[in-house]
Image (cartoon, rainbow, N blue to C red; front, side, top):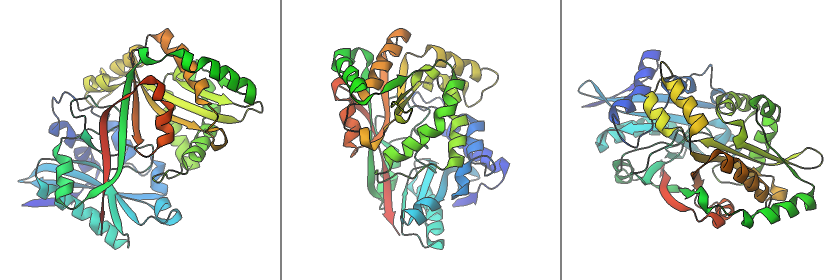
Length: 372
């Protein structure tokens, strides 16, 4: 007998967050989140996503043991502004029992029906800066702090229950030695002169902060045409500014501006925190903070988290300027490997940016959909 309970108290939410720690205990490739950071993300008083979204968190029990979890989410900006009558599901973890998945997804369907929505899609979070997709290939590769890991049977559960692929995401990687500066050095010099552009580099986080709002505006503008995109609000900008920017090496954030100091391109790269998070085991103290700080300073692997170019500059080679700046920074820091975080399979423009580096696809993930 499977029973479902809403995690609507602090104690139950903590159980909800901690369930994957038992499901993936001692797993070589699962990267645990920070427990308190997860709890803060589910707190309506702390996460501004709740200003335009609602979410419900459910636990599945069998023989009084937790055997699964799921979040049912409605992003009202998406529903009302984009006319996508969709309910999302995310933070889904489950034992290998399709009936548990069925029971959890039934709660998602109930929320959709209650609000006259037309289909379910997931796994995905509140916004485009949350984790996305169920892993379908690359189970023998360590995860990252900005992706979900899952067992191979997750995909099978969804397909058995009539869910079909909605969006495909690719993750690529390449060794830094593949980066040959001759592909972009001359080009970026010409582009800087032609369009009167200049790169901005940083050594202190406090120097980046005044420009972050402009960066998120550019992010909204440059990604607006993607089918899955929901713009970040002003309140969310402040939240993500505190959550992410202070966590990233300032040298790994690159901006390009024009002669009038308008931001025309940006990129955010972060060091790999995967092994540090495994050592932290969900907690900053007593030793988690040390492992994360060490990774921030010493990691030889980097993740390209976000890159955006103003639409009017997207076909003018501006990314050559960014790549040249990163080449200099990564050479100085002895970076060995570069990883690209999930990118939509049909985002051909972004894939073209990397062609000279001979990247290989090492993971695939997808969201699944079912009409109601």
